[in-house]
Image 1: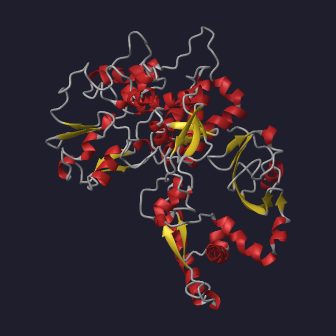
Image 2 (image 1 turned 180 degrees about the vertical axis):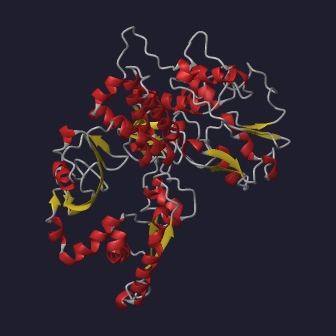
Image 3 (image 1 turned 90 degrees about the horizontal axis):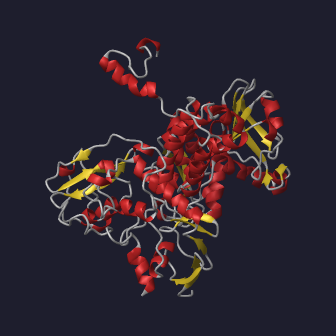
Length: 236
Length: 348
């Protein structure tokens, strides 16, 4: 078996390694494929679909699709961009995201993704669901209004912390994050030092009393768009 | 029907499939709605064990060991999707799995698994008994054999029919007594809603594909209502794993309902088309990839019906917002009707 796999993404030829996903190969080559549920170090999940690309014309999630020789991948074409914008819009309207008074503003990957795509307001109507806040734990809170069902905390708690604090309940539009206790976060084994506490892409899983340690204006995405850390690697 | 009338043939087909691929265990996944069949099917299995058609050394052949057990499901539509079915068998949420790996590589409990439907497995003993030529002698090129159709709706003779693959839909409608159908849903909710101009098309894999469901709609039925009912179904049956299916179906349904309520506008048709295409393209499994079909196929085949509902008003103003409905709750609290939009409460 050859130790490299040749493929093209948006007409750029690159060499990946066997066993890599499209997203991993693209990252290494300095090509940013937008993603929300995927996080390096966690098992690929493939739920947000924001990393959708066309592989030889067929839609696939870049975070779960392994590379194979000769793949011709479209990632930043107009058609793919429009699909991603639709998906980002959907994530905004299905929850209650009020960036202007969310403590994660500036560090939020969903917000940053919207800016990257030039979305100032979603094209779909807001669904205004009624969702709860669980502030029972002394150090941690869950604001379900902002959860995008990416399962990062589910995977991190299970695979990195060895705890399974989080999971999902219900189906379809009613699917939601739940904790491994009768009802409340305080009754789980979660701890503020858990790895699961560092992975939420939005303002759903929060450490209390840390909201404004870094002031707005000096946050991660305040001056550079999301993805530039990967694209930056390419120019060097 | 195959489970009640031909259970033996199904289990024979499973056993042969097990022999062919070297599997030791087969699972019949029985959804909750069919729990009443369980005792009967267990009896059939018991008899087959007694007759050495299951268990160790089947029919005396050393090394040919095969067991079949029944796994009850809870009745989720998505569990008909093969990887969700496997998740359910494993005791997990009935969510589809990420592919690859495909079930043939890594399926039930991580082991290579073949998933087939009951009708396919029932064909296997027939093919072995009568030879492939007999089987291939039925049907049309690319779609060999016969097909069971479950025909329901506005027809005088609903029921289950066995037809030659490749049969034109017109003949099916005549069989079932639905010659006056204004629309036919072929392939269940995720199939397509077609009109009379397509009735000459054939039931087969390459043209009108169906798992067997044919629903007929007679004069007086509204295709928009049909599409809305199917969208309701998909909103309910989505597992909620991926964004486009979880959110997109709700948005599609909401906009269709707005059109049905007479508050649509011409741009809504492009909106449905675009949104439906995104759901179809970006969804993770077959459910989401087909859930927009009720809208996309009715838009394609019954567009005048939609256009009639979204006509531009003469003054150019299409009220997508129902101000009367919006103020009604406040009117109830205030105890009198709105001064700006005066319409007596009792007339609503």
